[in-house]
Image 1 (tube, one colour):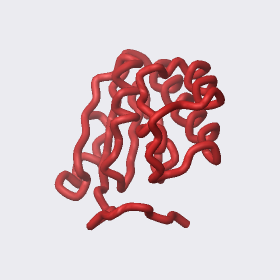
Image 2 (image 1 turned 135 degrees about the vertical axis):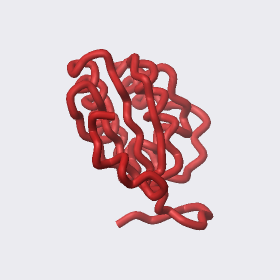
Image 3 (image 1 turned 90 degrees about the horizontal axis):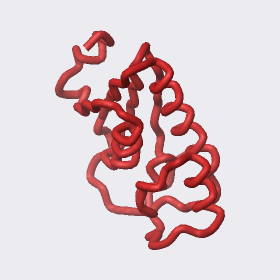
Image 4 (image 1 turned 45 degrees about the vertical axis):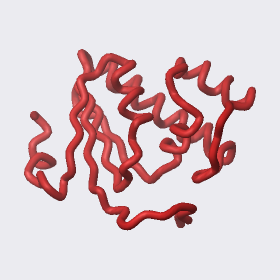
Length: 131
């Protein structure tokens, strides 16, 4: 169950983010970072809480993941309901959220070319993983 602590009109973005990496290994390593941060940040930060600083425990997690580019407010993105999968040299992230800058920054930092679109408006794009 997800409890929203803010105002929003609709949470059905059906957003797709695809990170095109130079190798399958780069895509897999980036997905591992996403999964690691999702697990390690759970229970340590609260969604909807205005974070202005990192505590030492959070700094240690980010240091181990080599993620010095994330802001305190972006950390909650890793706690949102997202689904990622690796297909060849791509990571495909799907979510109903609009706040995805943490994933975008991570993929860019790890060398990806990133595309983002709404599957509501481009439903055929999901059917063609070769794009």
